[in-house]
Image: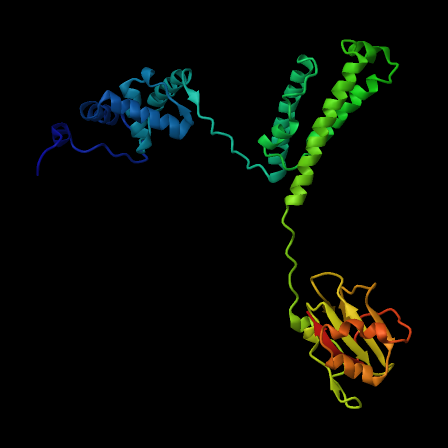
Length: 349
């Protein structure tokens, strides 16, 4: 075995301690071991670790004597000092604490929520706009180089409510000066003429206008919420007449109505031919027993003879345009409701 530390070879390993109070001889032997095997720098390190772990303070290492540092190590390793030695040890701590700094853990940073972040941004922007307002006044009311909108956009303002409230209150103060009879208020603003106050109000109106513009842009740029499509199976729980043997006609599938722009129906009970036109390009939808998105201005129904119904089935898209016009019976409003008396004749995209 190669010897790397001659002192420890002859003095033995670092002393170990139990719960028994150290005698005077134990204290001398232990301190002699540390003095022979450890340096003053080791003693300082022991004291620093003791202060940080036990007393929660930073230690001024310049004032540490080696004996104190070694005792810190011994106590950390389980040594129990006698009453006399403990008094000396505590006196040393008292002296050292006069030049120590208590370790204060940094305050836990609370994560700000969205509303708090918006408020901080608005407050900073308001302060910038107030600075711009001061520049406006000192420049003898020149607005040529002042664009409040650009200032708000530079702060990425998306909600301008706080800005609007702040400058509405400011505007009210100046507007009151033009009509007030309060001598104190008049005296407080006597450095401005009425013409200058009107210029100030106009400038504040510019800020308010640009703040409102910010909110309008956010709303207009917001992506429309995607409407969740209802499964076709849920939409098609409808009642209708699947076939009418008297005219030898059959109904098309109700799902053909969904998304189509024009639908032809025939009520076999009242012999009514029904024309439904969609209100916009999204076409019809069905919920329950009702067809939705009907243009009530162009959708009509008329009582017809059976041959007219057969004519609808045979007609092309172009041929359907004049069918209702050529029927001389009185037209009436449609409801868009389906029932067991309704044949679905055609559905056009």
